[in-house]
Structures are given as C-alpha cells and as structure tokens.
Image (tube, rainbow, N blue to C red; front, side, top):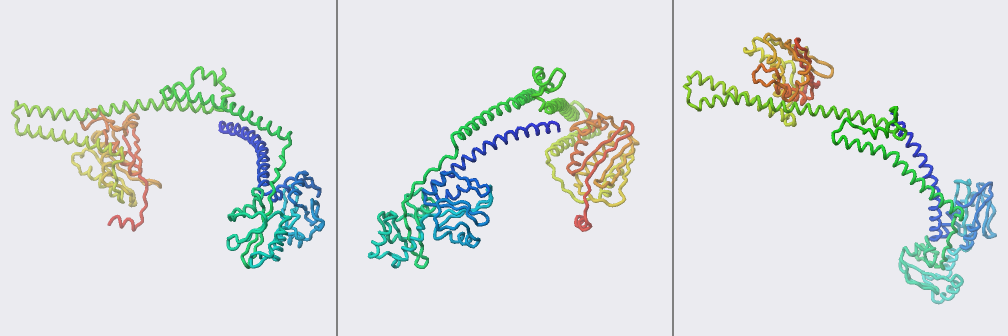
Length: 587
C-alpha cells in the first residue's frame, strides 16, 4: 500500500504540473484557433462573421460599451449598422444607424423584429448574448433593402414571369446604379437574363453558395420567389473582396505567445529526460535481474555493484530508488519462490526416474519368470510330470495376468491425466451402493482373516456417480487397507452427511503410515520394487482413485499415524433431486 500511495502521489503531482502547463498552452492555442476561424468566416461571409464575432470582441460594463474601432470600419465597409439593446429595451449603443430607428423598443416590437427580420423596412440579423457581459440583444442591419427593391421590380415589370421587351429598357435603367443583373428561373430552367453582365446558367449549389459565402464568389445575390407561379427572380450584385480581419495579437502579445511555446517545449523536453532517468534506471536493474533469472541464477537478485547503487551503507534504499523499494522486496521474494520451484522440479525429476525404474522392475520380474519357464520347456531336457506342467502353466498365467493388469493401470493413468475418460453418471442411493461393494469383501473366503463393517446414514442419499468407475475407487481403497495390513485388521466403511458434502470414510486399525509415506501416497508410482502382494508401496491404485474422485468433483484426503491405522475420506458434493427426478432415473 505504501508503494501504491507513493506512486499515486508522485504521478498526481506530475499530472497537476502537466495539466497546468497544457491548460495554459491550450488557452493560447484556443485564441489562435478562434482568430483563425474568425478570419475564415469573415472571408467567406463577412456579414455572418461580423454578427458572430463582434458580440464576443466587445466589453460591456454598466451599459458602457468598449469596442475596437476596426469593427466599426468593417460595418461601414459592408453598408451595415448596429444597435445594442439592454433587458429594458433601451438602445445603449448605436453605430452607423439610420435616423429613422428608435432609441427603445417594446417587447411587441422586439418579437415583431424577431419574426420579420426587419426594422423600419431595413433587413436585420439578430444576436442574443448572455454569457460574460450580461443579457443583451444585438441588431445588425443593412443600409439598403435589396430584397424589397427586387420585390417592387417584380410587381412593376413582371408579365407572366417574363419581362416584356417594352419594359426591358426601364428595368435595365433601374439596374445601372447597382451594376448588377437579374436572372429569372422557372421550373429549374433559366428563362431570361436582364442586365449588362449576362452569365451562363449556374448550378443549384453555385447560387446557394453565393447566399451563404458571398466572399468566395464574384457576386452576391438577393432572391424573390413567387409562390403562386413558381417563378424566381435572382438579383446579382457585385461582390466585394472581404477585408482581412486585423490580427488580434499585438506584436508584444505575439512575442509572449512564442516565448510561452518555447518555454513549454523546453520544460517538456526536460521533464521527459528527468522521467526517463528516474524510471529508466530501476527498469534496467529489473531487466538485468530477469536476465539472471533466465539463466537460473535465482540466488542473485542484485550484484554487489547494483546493491551499492540501490542501498546505503546502513541498508536503507537510496532516495532515487525509494519509490520501488517494495518492488525490490518482491523480487527477492520471487527469487526465493523460483529457487524453491527449481528444487521441487529436481525432486519431481528424481521421482519420475524412480517411477520408470519401478515400472521396469515390475515388468522385468514376471517376464524373467515367464522367460525362465520358456527356456526350460524349449530345451526339452526335462521330463515334467503332468502336475509340474500344470503348475508351470498356472505360474505363467498368473504372471501374464499381473502384467496385463499393470499395463491396464498404466493406460488408465494416462487416460485420467489427459481427461480421456467420460463418466456416465446416474443417481445412486449411496448407502445401498457402498454396502453392496463392502459385501463383496465380506463374502470372499480368501479374506476371512480380515473383518469388514459398513455404517450407513439414517436417510437415503442420492448422489450422481458413475457406478463402474466409483466401484473401482472403493475396491482400490479397501483392497489397499487389506493388502498393506496384517491379518485380524478391521476395515470400517462409514458414511457421513454434512451441509456441503457426503463423506465416505475407509478406516483401518492397521500399521499406519509415516508423514513421508502420506505425502507421496498419490504419486504416479509410489510403491516398492517387489511384485509380491505384501509390497510396502501402494502402486498406481491410490493415484487412479484420486483422479476418478476428482472427475466426480470430489476430494480425497488421507490421515494416518504409525501403529494406529489409516483413515481415507472421500468428500462428494451433495446433489438434491426431487421425487419425480428420482423416479425417472430409477425407471
């Protein structure tokens, strides 16, 4: 947790510093982008650009307006005027306004302006601002109402959409002061052009572009539509090259901006170098450590030279590495684990070799017997009686059966290891199933020197089991209790029920096992090298039994004490079935 807190605090401080630097730089960049967008908008559509820009470029305090004179010049150059109205409807600022305009407006008049976009027959653009300066309403109007003029011409000279030849001179005379021309469209087709600068028919978006971006075209247009006849008159007026807006920064401000950029760049580079130096050196130590781990030098986390870099004489971590002191401790701890794992690997390798040696011995011994009898029979030097031949054949058969059983056990071990067995589970009543298995041992006359007892549960308990494989488990465990204990040993099979599991305990009061034997009990081949039934080891049986129990989602636990016997517990998860499910399974 200390490492987490230190790293969090360390990076939080860096984040705050970086955030402040980036924020300041972002403000400068934002001003630059705003200026660029203003410039582009003013070049494309000076009118809309002025409407959007001027309210943000002025300061209004106590109804006193401060604005740069350059914006007043731009308004005048574009034949525009401006009024600023406060929340009471009073005009607090005017620029280039016609004398006919009012000094205050009622709410009705403002709503009328908003709807018609006209004031005293002057077309206007409106803008409402409530951000920094308070609540103000802006009116941007034009000195000339070209749309109204175009409508009057249409009323005076229109003859079913066209302009009659007799009326053309009069209309052309009206157009001369404007230095413009008129195009008349009907159903998308240019039907007449009037004026001195006739053009070819323009595309749909060419005309729309002259409305929205007049600064990018040689003409700007005004349109009059007659909804009844579907006739459109378009008045083309000479376009003005939009004056470039004055750069918003003074030379001093530009210098400050450049200095800020250079300082930010310098600090970023220094910060990167410092971060690389601070975090890179520990990473190099970790890389060196990983290389040593790759060479299995687990006992050497840091060399003596590296230890002097990291630790002081008194053993404390140096300041530049203190951020990672828990990491170094974790590396030392990991090295110990890897060293332990390597020792365990060596032990398992040794166990594997012993396992292979045991397999070879268990196969070699019966093979030697079979081979010896085979040579005797092949030599034809001996006259065996019928009884002797019968004994030889019986011995060869027993050794062959033993070898076949051993090979089958090997095959089963590898199938269990590689999940090559599929269980066919069915719901079994556990008391009845276990008693039936124990009964086989009770009825075996060859085991009359041993005693067997089965203690079941009071209530029937159904468990999903594979009867074939689980019988193999119980046979192995009970047979081991017999095989490795002297006569008169008592074997008790007890069934117990808990909230989470059903336990099957195989108890014996035999010789028991020491701790080492219990530890190696489930090894793949933990047994003696003798093929006699009284071998001290337990062979593959316990390994097979444990694997089958685990396939049933259970667990197998062994408790033993020398001279007091052994208890093996099989813990199986409880499965609850309804009465109908039990009946269907039984059927």
